[in-house]
Image (cartoon, rainbow, N blue to C red; front, side):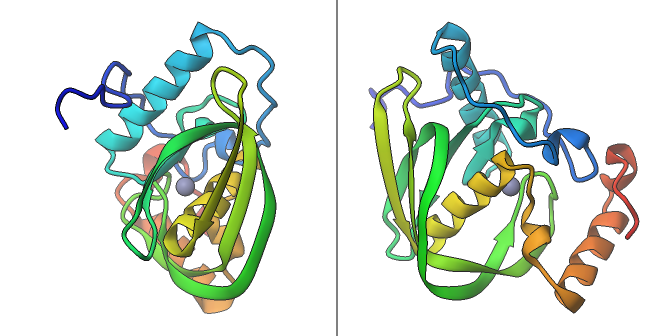
Length: 186
Ligand code: ZN
């Protein structure tokens, strides 16, 4: 499939914001300008996500406080889901709550069993303002919930409790990137 334009191939790779960066805990703003700058942002987000070998990326992870995320993520049946959403809203999160391995480009190298609903529906619009509805199950439902959390200023470690939370935060505090990011040593 070489003839197809690869999403993000014209984008610029940005440095990722890491745990401890205030950009990750501030809720993002609704997008109101559907212009070339928004298209470039989405291209840059794809380029950054692919460079980091991620399956999803929210705009505040590159320091842009807007409600936008991109994804290229398999579900549990190995179906590929590729796209972006502007002004997304998690309208359904239901089905069984499953604890599965989850990581984040803002906490590189760390993974923790995180509870998520098995089914999610997110509505929003495209870069050109066309309405979109994205439905996910399994690992892709997890991804959709994870990215929506980012835009509300949340991280998956906020969903952890007890020993799992302490273990993940301790690993983050000891990670090679922690000093640069100013991660709290909780
Ligand atoms: Zn993340």
